[in-house]
Image 1 (cartoon, helix red, strand yellow):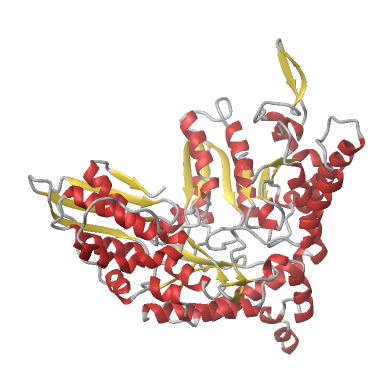
Image 2 (cartoon, each protein chain N blue to C red):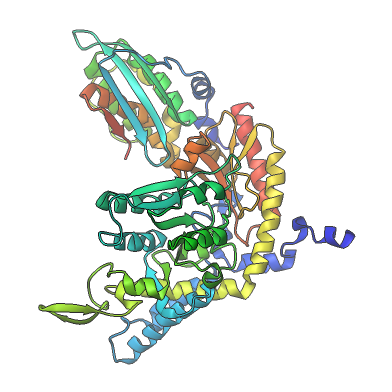
Length: 421
Length: 153
């Protein structure tokens, strides 16, 4: 027992020196805001970038840049190798079987829209059902509503309980002969719930229904294995995993990518074009019309290499420590209510101070250098479930420290001073 | 605490936000509009009654939002009651300039009314919060114009 206690989550993060080294890799963290050291706790919105990514972009643009795929000259070859090399990094990151199943998009939203736009007449008919959940970001709701509007299908949300747990029993009831697709998140962006995604996929597959997983909030926090999950589609975005903005990823099982029609027409996605008719390239190029976000993909590859250098298991352990400590510190604050207490959570902590609107909280803690997100987090159905208009959300990355948590807790005291509570 | 924060969260503003005035519906009123700030989800409804000469005889609101938007709405309902509707619109312009820190609207207004609104000028230092302060005013303007919905976007 004594040995176990020593390794309790509260002590299982990086040691001081290692954390200092990691933080030194992120130039954005080293600055003052309103005269106070920046405490960056808005990682679920977007993460800071390591020097490895910033320098990779600079080297790529300064040395290896040209358009990809068609050029026979040296720079085009270098750029193509870098771009396709990034695809291989992403493949390994997700443990996808092949690189052909990795499609670059501009973000996770586009990746979902890509799949949703392919679920049209012929695949989706009037009366068909798409199962989603109350935990979803708007980006995993609205594309399906649009698909449903086009076809006469319906989107059915799986409810959650008061802790923010995905209700598997209710999900089972919603799965039926009319279900054509399940689109659910791996981790809630607003309250951190980790959904039982393996079980969700298993149950859907029992009914022969494919599953799209929104992994935007999982990818920064945990190792992902799309083969172990048996996910049909898995999406995430580059800028939340310490890469550039403007790059997202869609993993799709080859059988699906062969079946689905092209997303956009243009260069690079064709095999042969004539006015009599056009044949399309094979995946992934079938879904990557036009000049892709080349440098952004290369930067994402560098980000993944950087994170792998630390190791996702150690990232997860450090963040589990941060979440436990933050939950403990914030729970001790009078009149603070944590929104979302699922048994498994990523390092995302949503809360409200009684009688104080989240926007006021956000403005006031910013003056202590603490960056958090306030609002509905693009998850209004979830906010409605908890009967709140908004929450304040602290979201952590592996470069955050216990001192960051302390700074957040202290800054919340100044909110209470101003509002006299 | 910084001076900017102190100026933003003055006691008058906190008082109005804790205890908003005219926080009720006006049943059967003709001039009403719904305002929403889609970025933060703040929403409110403005209710106005006008007499035959276009004078605002009563003003009220309901809704939820941050301290700035609630205080701004509460103070607005107090100030525009009794104003001619053209004056209320002109005051909106002046208020807009006040919180944006820009321009000058060219119409004579009661300086007392403007003075009362001066407490919200601190929002100038917080560009992300200006829309919190102006939501109620946009919505009031929409109600007078006969638009059902106002948005800060």
